[in-house]
Image: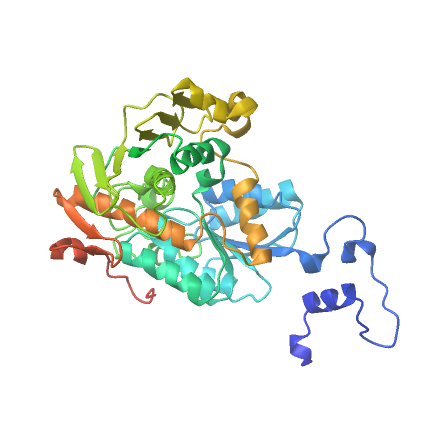
Length: 434
């Protein structure tokens, strides 16, 4: 073997397999081979993160608890965040030798990093994920995973082209109460399905610019890299430090619809057995969005009128009954006979799976790392994410354009509406072309 390719990882794998490397005996500590009950370094999944704001920190706290994950590097355009993240990871998880980068491309150039967490602002998710796939990394991306319809398709195609394991951060598919609700709908326990309801934020969009401020030194805050593929505009610290970029059309997926809709519309898609497809008609009435699937099931996306079972609620209604649940983990059903489907677990959902963000500390993230090893497709793979995000984008466009839109999910085409079709994509700022 060429000496330049004889890596430490290859060395450890060869030793652990019992192969003879040289005539002289090689003595290694038991922990290096995983013989002390731990995990050998050669079997660890190495991880880097792009973006370490509040959500990036949240995800990392769960990822770094996985015994087979080794953290190596941080990429973040804000120096204060880079340094703070390195400090708390070193302190809380006893991780040493963490590299920090202002430019994520330096992180992606490292051959010793297997997986990447993308937890930037929305404008960067798809681009960073595609660049990571091109660099041979597997990707866990926060939602929304892409901010246009065309970019959703491009993301899914790229993950397939490069053989990338991709998990979208729509973790509610991995939670027991939501899985149970979707199973009732999918398996006909509610009778013929009539309507599926998804909780969303109150819709909002902005096209203004915040007042210009002096641009900081790029080693402190790299404004150009923060903007990334989005159109240029003057620097204002509120975008960066206070995260007040939300609802600004240039940075957001459109109307803030994906903030909750990425989760709840995804669950509705699952309940309707519509993964890989989307509704064929969309319209808006005030802050409510509607869609109709080809099989006649109505999709209702609304910010209010819920039963108080927690954020990101969903409700599925059939001819014979209904079910509603949310992040509290509690479940309401009708008729009462459906409670029997839960058995003794019914009373435990709130305590076991509750939380303001519907978080399961293990299942969704563990599913990603397990699939990195097996090369099976994760729960929220790129194809699943693509179709549910497209449903959100198309319904948001009906609100933005203030008219009914007819849609062909097979071709991602709005019928007889050139303006809507133009809004399926955006012009990305060079050099960030994918």
